[in-house]
Length: 247
Image (cartoon, rainbow, N blue to C red; front, side, top):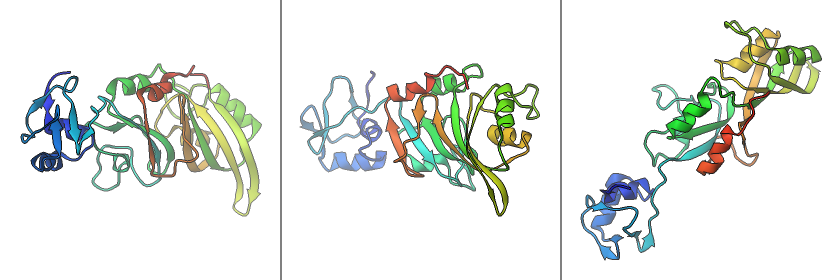
C-alpha cells in the first residue's frame, strides 16, 4: 500500500476527524514506530510502520466497509436530500463514498446494504443477476391461491415485459372492520420501481405496510432495531451474491 498522511490514516481508522486527529498529534498522543511525532502531515507506510494512539495500536482501515441497516420509515435511500433524512444519517461516516445498494421507498422499512464497494454494488444491481429479495407485507384485500399462481406466472405491471416468476406465501387473511386484510411474504428477483406495490395493485390489492426481510444470502436480524446497523465483513457482504435467482 502506498504512503499516506498520518492524519488521514488516523481519521480513516476512526480515531477522529482530520481536525481532531491533528490535535491528538500536537498533544503527543500519537507515536510512529515507538516515537512521538509532531507532524500530522508526515507520510507513513501502513504496511510496515506501527502507529499507536494513547499507546494502543491503530489498525489500518479496511478499503471497503459494509453496513446492514434496518431502514426505518421516513428516510430516503439517497446519499443526500435537502428535505428528508437519508439512510446515511444512520451509519458512521468514517469512510468516503458510502451509498445505499438499491433503494427502498421512503415508507418501506427493512434490510438495506450501505457500502463504498462499487464493484459489489454493480454485481448486485446488474439486470441479469436476479438477486432474491423477500418482503413482509400487510395488504388491503384478501390474497388468494389464485394470486399465488398469478405471481408465479408473472404479472403485467405496465412495463414492456411481465414480472419474472415470484413466490407468494399467505401468512394470514382476516376480515376486519375495514374489510379484508392479508399478511404475506413475497420473494422477487428483480428491482423494478415500487415493484411489490405494483404487483399487489395488479392483483387488485393495496400494500399498507412493507418491510424487506432478506436480500441474497443476508437476512435482517430480529434483534436489530429500526435505525440500527450491523457492520459486516466482506465475506458476509459477499453472501448477497450467493443466490440461484429462482423465486
